[in-house]
Image (cartoon, rainbow, N blue to C red; front, side):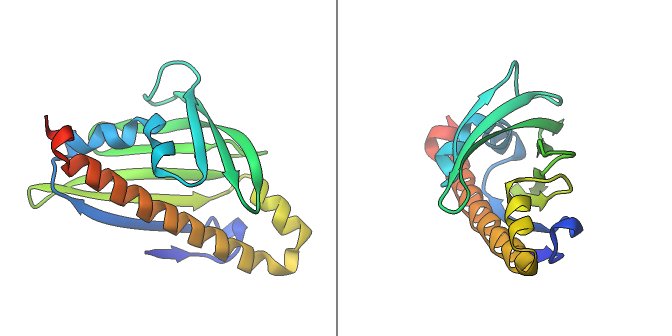
Length: 171
């Protein structure tokens, strides 16, 4: 795991990857069907497509809960849907996307190298309000949130790997 940037305006990013003993074509539905994500998340409670999904341009609404940030709903848009290699979406912010999440699937040694990334900003989000209230603590606020993203990515990658490698998914 690594991240760069310490201030929200720097659009800091965190990423991680895992190797999966399954071809990208088997892993693809596990990343492109975002409605599967709440089962892998401690923050995302539910996700609803606002029309057809999951192609490029598809819109969805996610309902979230966080101990420090409370409950909120936010809409997002699939911005890349290149089966079976890249899937990305951006969450709506006040003036631009507040976050960008993506998966890259690369054939690797008979399986798939799956990388997930999360980038903050550039648009304002609920985190921006916390920073506005405590501007002297911005770097700490961003650091803590990136650590939460890191934990979420690790959990998601492990769940996807387990699902892709299970006998149920191979059938």
